[in-house]
Image (tube, rainbow, N blue to C red; front, top):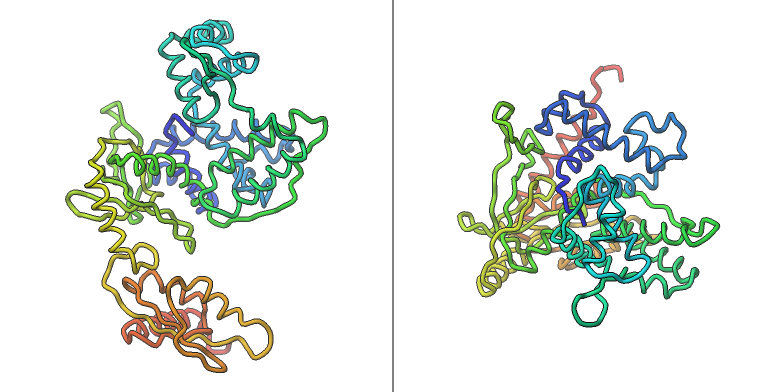
Length: 441
């Protein structure tokens, strides 16, 4: 995973996809909370990475940033994620050191001192030479992410590349493994690690074969780009939950005018930002498949249980740990409060009763099949020839409303009465939008 923060690139890509390039440079910069110069610098950097990814692409497709999204309709989510990690995963100096370390370890297991000597020879002469502490920190990082492992034996420890699993598989087995990872990464959440693993596996197979062996047998298209971008934060948040650590972050609510704020080091260029510094104890991460959003549920000492949209979280840092008994107490309280939540609502419980209308006497009853599949703990309490009644108790009606509304005229809210009237008012409003503006139409 990345050692550098790439909040700016995440927000940049999200805005670009959602607005389809409708903003001007100035509007983009204001929305991100950065200067136009920083916007141009970021754009140039991303264009350079795209050019390295698509070296065989026609020149016309390398000119505009939007071409990266249109280059391959079904692959458009993959490069957006991968080039983001390549762009900000490591600093240039770190990239040179780690490349030299891996090149040396690819030949034979070596100690930290031997790697220091090999790294000093492999780095360009104009670059700053690393010291032993820096090399050991790099080795610790590579060991944590599973790239290298220590060989058995006494000190000083020797390190080697951790690729035995790949080397023991035949080419046909690698292709089967690639297909499995491809399916899982494109159909399950979270997918970030799967995309990175798939990309590395494809490169390995193509390096060891004269022909292109990684044939793409499946095509996918996922409409929520932001879901994949937000998963970049999951590793750190899940680690904080596992370690029972608080996190500190700058949060931009969905109503905020900005989605990012640069870290100002020069007081002459300080700008007002709309984000709020938050400190909370992460308890659970929830994914809303209907909108493609990730939510963090956390405990705040002042406000109790808080809900944060991951897309608004930037500059995330781990803070101090808490006692296990305290963490378990807050976790248990959260589970009780969201037991009846359609997604994450913690409001008062209300029983919702809806009549669904069957599509017809012939053919599959896709309405009932969908209700049974997506209706969570709700039950069908009454069935007739042309319809059935579905009943569920949830914390409020706000989160279940989009699901019910997605059935259109195939359903009717029966209870509670206030919810029924709310749905009627919404449909009347929608109907008004389609009324003719001229009398002779």
